[in-house]
Image (cartoon, rainbow, N blue to C red):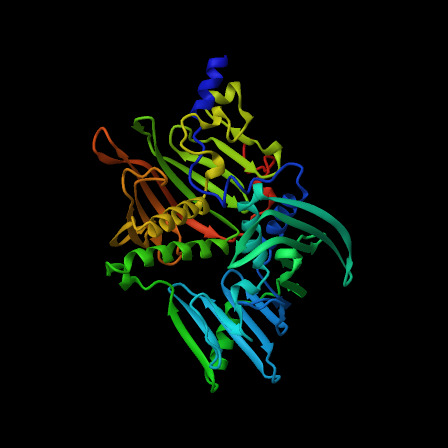
Length: 488
């Protein structure tokens, strides 16, 4: 019986690629801070649009004391529509619109201001990011920073109290070694959140000697007002006619530079950074995932899964093609003792229909190149950015552009990257990646390693995402083993 069970475990092929900083973002069982982060992201994912008032103090350049910026009213239709308005020193209303479209970005702004391709402009010498001024500052900047420095930080719950008729909770995060954030050295962070929803109310960054280097307050938050893209289209059409207003369409990617040998490496690096930015605005996704991996010396048969994924790391998978067709798994961060719940089908179902397994244990890793915790689009992007940035800095990156192709009948750019075969610090020696032109995300990746014996590169992993749908508002029910749609 024991050997039979071992065969069952050995058959489990826990998906590879990706997750949002998978290993770092696993929620600790007893950690109030990480549970708060998880709750906050889940609640934020349920918000389609919102408006709020942002009050901000920040330092810039050599400036020592934080400068108070004008109060800004922000309207945000997720994921990529922003309106920011404020009154300047003369009392004149200034409005900025940022729309990240399918093939380009649309900026509307007063002519007196200059705006960068990533949506930054200056107020009194201080840089203001249009996307970065929203509530997503917590989710796109602060939480990833904490995840990356999990072994370099300690935290303290400072208690809860009422603020403006709302019960709030405060957390203090201290870094053992200061961390770099957008060129600023951060020693600690104070987070004040709504005690019920964990949506941020105030974020303060401290530098040396606990000096304030950034303070952001969010007030008058109004969620799900049913704002749609027409609101922004009308605003652009209305303002376009006025003198002193600039409307620019900036291509998200200048594909022509991919055929320029002197520019292709830099453009490729920028494309993957843009992929990371796009992914930061995705809170959940569903679709079909295909994988094929080399185990020992053999490339295994392809497998196909139906998937649901929600940040920070909740995953449901059902095998729909391959040797384990009909099997299911759930991993919900912070639940089920952080174990993977697996339901099997076929003959194995008679002996052990459902069981729990350590996601990084030896049994789970049998016949797998990756832990289930390394699943997802985010994990792939992270690996690419790390390796491409390193190889680019070391001047040992080779990129080839293979034009356009289609995955799931969707147009993609095809990029091949290569690093020296004798270098071991990289994830793989060569890769071919299909970047969806609309999504600006990798939807197919083929990874190769160098075989010294055969003196050639060989495929080790092939991962494909199809039929993707983003920001569907997935809930805890989608990652509950008691869900009647599942067979656990």
